[in-house]
Every structure is written in C-alpha cells, then in structure tokens.
Length: 215
Image 1 (cartoon, rainbow, N blue to C red):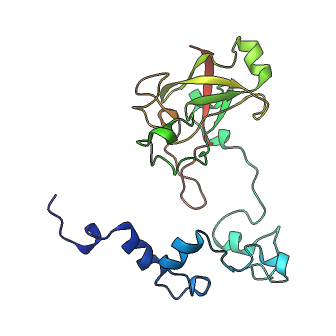
Image 2 (cartoon, rainbow, N blue to C red; image 1 turned 45 degrees about the vertical axis):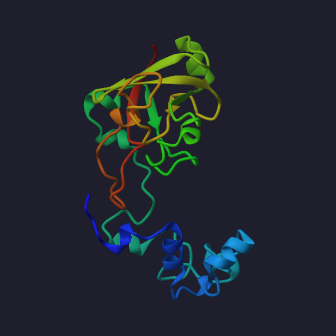
C-alpha cells in the first residue's frame, strides 16, 4: 500500500525489544536474548488483590465496599443493582424463552486469528443447552439448532450439558459469519443487542433473549 513508516518495517523481534524498553519496574532486567534463552520469566508483580497481601483496596475507606461512594458519585446505585436487563428489552424480546450468554473462548482473542486452521478447530459454533430443555425440545448433542429473535437468526450444533442452567443457552461471541459450517453467513452477533452497558460502555452481550429450536 506504499506505507513507509518504520512500524511497517519492524520485525517481530524489533517489536518485542521496543515493548521491553519500559520504566515499569517488574520488566527491568528482561531482554529479548534472556527470553530466548530462558523461554519464560516470572514477573514479580504486585498482588492483584491488595487485601490478600495486607494492602488496601483503592476505595475511600481502603476496604472492599458493599456501599460504594465511588459508584454513587458516578451516578449509579451505591449498592449493587440486581435489576434484570429484561426490563429494558423490546417487548418482542423480553418474553422469549431463553437468555443467550455469549462469552469469549480462551483459544481466540475476540474475532482474531480465525484464519489459522488449528484455531478454527476449536468449535466456536456450539450451542450449549441444558438437558431439561433439550429433552423437552427433542434436541440431542450433535443436532443442528436454530436461535432467533427480532434481530435475526443463527445456526449452531447442539451440545447438551449441565454447564448451563435451564432457560439459558450459550454460544461464543465474535465467531465469524463466513466460517460457520452449520449456517452460512450466520453467527452469534446476528442475535445480540448493540446496546452498551451502563458501566464502562462495553457491549451488553448477555442482555439478549432468543428462541431455540431443532433446525
């Protein structure tokens, strides 16, 4: 494309060296050559949960707060709000029978690396269904199933498991439409809401309800 910036000429090793050129204390003394020799190096990082090591939480009180003034100042309920997202759903969605959970899976970074064949071997197009729901709907592991709501439809292969509760189905987020072997040009994101979460402005993937049927 004609780009001449140095970033486009850097090799992977160049980038690793640049990453390690930092004032961050727990990276001091770590070099590319040392990584190549030792393969992995333990970082003496601070405890991620301060109260375990005698430290304090980053709150005004220094404690884990069940009533949070930080939350209150940000405009949220100072005590955790257990209001269900169904209250804010469109009428045609809130009464659908299944809540769709769509977390990431550890073999992928969101939608990255689907071009790598061995990563595609980890099935991102499963739909986990509780045995009670599967029996009622006549669904067995390995069956092709259809999820749909007012946004669209998507096809998956069923996996009957107690990993999900009755009334819940689970698929992976960010699977590619073009590589779905069970329904061309369909994926989890065909079903999920585009609404953002109230805290952090992240995708509200779990605020989605769907129908489930054997395809």
